[in-house]
Image (cartoon, rainbow, N blue to C red; front, top):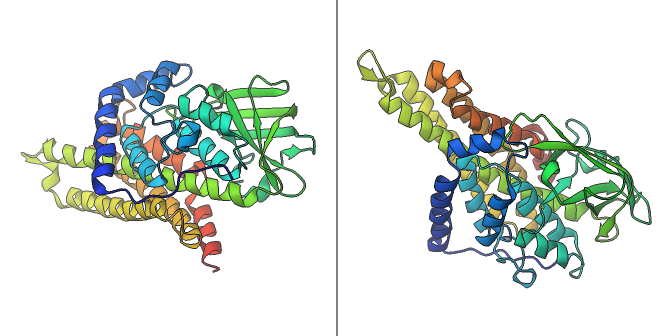
Length: 371
């Protein structure tokens, strides 16, 4: 396993500083107008913005200091992800700085992928993960892409986040003795990348075809356990992002309920709207407690195996429900594409399927509890 930051329990002051700094930057640089501009662009993001994130140290938050990163823990990254969720920040941050980085941290041995971690942290390259191949195929037993003993990989991957922008694609492949991790470049012979329409245009997806591609093996033997842990870390951090989006959608509803008048009084004074907003808060607080707990127990293998799928399931369902209720509170205007409520609804639904549906996460939870 590559050198990874140890889990820390940072003082509240440090987390508050990360939160306030991130919120100020994201509010300034990624307001809804800017997000929509990125959505309408060909790539959905640009390299200059990526370099700026690298300069702030965000891309290397989970990379050890020996490899040019900040060496912080999932607790700190969870705070940053939550703030990004509030802004529905577009681009490949989750694919590269979270998923790709977590996979290398968990699977690599004896610093074998130090160059990749350094390049990811510096923003020199953008990474992504090609894991899944079929709808609802979130179990690693479903991986059909095959790798030979000389690290040649063949197969078709779907639902690859931001594949069109990636310089590094980490491919999960069946080795015949488990699942292995292989690094390929989109420019390698035999690699074809195609961007496909996405429900959430702020987080693009693509298809990757691998035709006898000469790849770089990361790790050795059966890497299934390490890969599952990396994906669980990604799920826990995605849950924190979902909490941020959920909070923003709830606040949008509350603000509208205070200022929208009907029959001479704010709609928030009507019982039906009060109940909707109160239930939003309950859903949010439930998701928040589960997500926060998951990133704080990553050093406890047994507890984390329970906390990660629990957080993913609860946060996915809470965000999707709150985002839908937000549209209902806004009434007719909320149903128009021009309204920002749709940014959150589309992100909520897409995120709930990114690393496994709530139903699949509950299946993982049942396995962890040996039910």
